[in-house]
Length: 249
Length: 324
Image 1 (cartoon, each protein chain N blue to C red):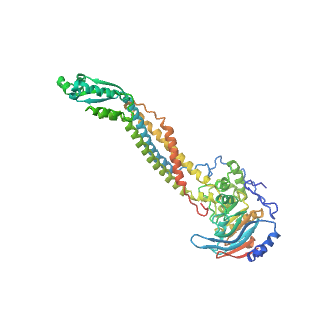
Image 2: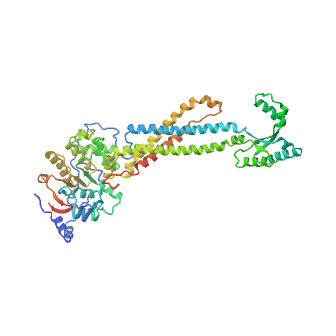
Image 3: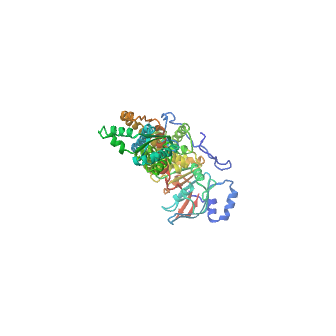
């Protein structure tokens, strides 16, 4: 099922081929990184020498053992941590040079799904899903129909005013997906969104992410669930010990 | 298909796969009624009030009430002093033998000297007999020998003042009296200078108010810190979603302002029983307190103190992974 990704594999191995790939494609990559390195203040090197390019509209699995650097890489995509060296350009923004205001803009254009959902349990499903729009300054009158539609999409239209604790794990993750997609971001980052779910529920969650991808969103998903790759194929980026160990399509 | 308004930048047309809206269906659109006022976090929306907030209002209210009582007392003291200060006289005494010496020329010179002080409206030499009569009555008709009193009492000058707040007036009077061996009634000087002591008391009241204001700001700050800790996840999430800092902090600053202002109004209401309880006593002292003047002071002061506490509380709200 896994096919070699010509463009990225060639870029990883030979930087000079990259120009050829650019010439072949008139798309600008959504994410571009070159010799990316991340070292935490503790001295631990989380990522080293990552050169990778992710075009708009791809579905990318990020796999690797615990501590391989998957979450660190995802965090860099939304400015949670800044690269120590190398370059990282996300949605046209150089993440090393970007100021706080630019990082905020990137976050508003990025949907993030966490393994532990990070839902606000003191707030209703509506309030959770409306939060990204509220942050972007939407008025309440506009919010309600939008949130209704997004929740209907993930099959939770009837849970609008429920609290997350009343939902099952799968439903909570669907609320998290709804929250990530409600502002219609071009990039969705999912950090092990199926980690706590059974196989069937995980597949359903992945169906939603695949559907979002089919509709144009770039989805980058860190996961340990390799069996999902068979039913939901995509590009696979493998990290090992903070370095790029493989990239296949 | 519906258009998604939240997308600020649409992908370029030359992209291989154009972004289109997911198949968002309208199912359940009308099955649940909309809440008229959903409780959304951030921005100008106040966070929910809990027991911590109520306790903070109570504590700050007590402190503001104490400030109100202090300034009410200052107002009463100012009115009371003003009611009798207009009639105050200063007496200068000259020993009888010094007054009579040189055919009374020394006494005349002293009187002239006193009259030359600009802030003295008039100088009246009190006859010894009048002074003796007054002393007899002051001593409740002690049946003293009046002629003996007349011989023993000093020569007395009664000064009426035009401006008792003049800086060097009392030094000038003392200087004039001492030149001719006389002395000034210092108790009367102290009474005449009551405005000075009131002004000193005002400084103390102001200092006490500032100390109490800082204490109140810290109380509100601590309360809000607890709220911030309780809502750390929400703040963290808002930052991850790209919220601006003012959007994250504004609810807490508003909360501090509302807490302070509410405590100010409550403190003002609690000042009324003091006025009602002491009205008869205040009337005898010709004091008519105006409590309404304290309302804007307590309201604005409370709001300001609450805002200060909120700013202190939110000055450093750190969220991991957000760069803040």
